[in-house]
Image (tube, rainbow, N blue to C red):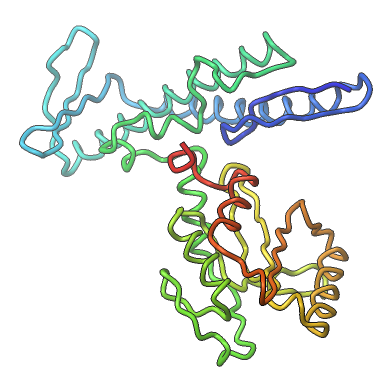
Length: 298
């Protein structure tokens, strides 16, 4: 049994365990990372080549951002640039150049790590990862740059804003309001929704899941931001009711036919009249799944 810890695309450490001594699975993961890094290198080099000479420097003076153009390293003060007209365009081009240079350095650093250590890319590498570069720029520069890849926050924001087909089945049963202002069908769903909202975990309520001609409406579709993967959550609130339990089994079988398995991409919770779902249950599940943001989990 061989185990390899590698750095995946989203700056999260993943563990791959494989039987035997076949390393091809590991090589495939490393090749995916190298493909991304080489794509970023090419884009960065193109941007740097077409960028103007010199560097951009910004200062905060009286709560206002001021930009200065340094044509060479010897120019320590720089020339003030207005944000209007041609000088405004120059600011954007120089900001993009700065971003490209930082991305290029980060990508080249990671590629060297991969070539030098084909078995492990440590989570604690001293070189910055390309996904971190936007956050390393000053906020005033982040909005001026065109990003090669989405940050986790950008990816989550775009995912959350995607429209989806609304499930209007028995709308009159949605009696419980969540912190986000939507209506759900039970107090337990209200608990789940409120915790997800409070933790800042992106979710969609009763968003359709399609596979061929089949369509299901999971109670919640959650975005695992770290892996950029959707997780589905079904809560069965009347597990002690025989007819309800039979319908629940049928729905779980439908998930299985769509290759969505319990313990994999599907979270299943149940409750009875004597054993209701509570906040501790939900938090424990989210923690075990690694879905709680680092800033909160810490």
